[in-house]
Length: 154
Image (tube, rainbow, N blue to C red; front, side, top):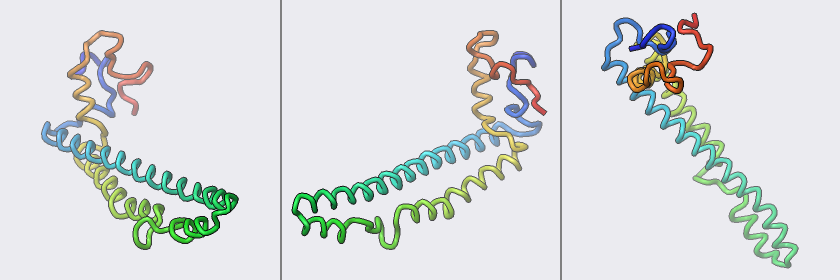
């Protein structure tokens, strides 16, 4: 619980009336799972960008092979690897789009709807309560909010 209104969490990070410990913990777990999916999605975008960068570098490899008098090898690189699907029928952008449409967006929407329905749309309640329990009241490096943040932003 906050030590005082001046040094407690802002309203957006206070548990709404009637929300149980179990619900806050469950929403925290759902949020943590979504955060993990966000990281996985970032890795997928990294895979997409690195694969694209490699494919574009093949243009240089083909040019250099031709300049080196290795036309047969340049032809093989162009025919066998350049522009190749990474899985049958898919370039990486198609994998990213399918992931977003099939998994990421439904997951993100469900997590948001759960927070809206079960906790008045408030985000990170579990973490906010953990912060409140772990901070040292009155310590300048343990304040509840950034400087200038009102306790009730509404």
